[in-house]
Image 1 (spheres, helix red, strand yellow):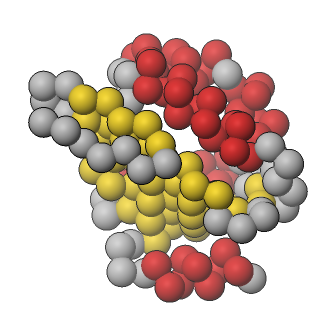
Image 2 (cartoon, rainbow, N blue to C red):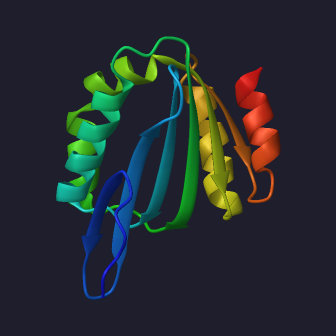
Length: 139
């Protein structure tokens, strides 16, 4: 089975695929798309891409579309935790993040994360609310 790789990273396994892409959309915006389950290799590659493509952004905006979501592996969580200082520096480049997710719990966790990271305002939207998400990011 083959899975498309857009401007991102795809991993194939017998059961599942992970796809994470980061696409610049103007001088201060990144569009992220995520589907699947990340292992440590995919997490490392995804974070490398995210950090690299956020270089030079100030007062940025992010549109993060979450498709089918599976919890990352323990190895992937370990990679993310080991890079927290770098990730906090990257997050500080952004003022707003709109999360579009089908699953209510993903939207709820996203907004809770926004409360825990005061430098980044996060608002969650359902599929079909893309225009509202875009308008909020443009404010």
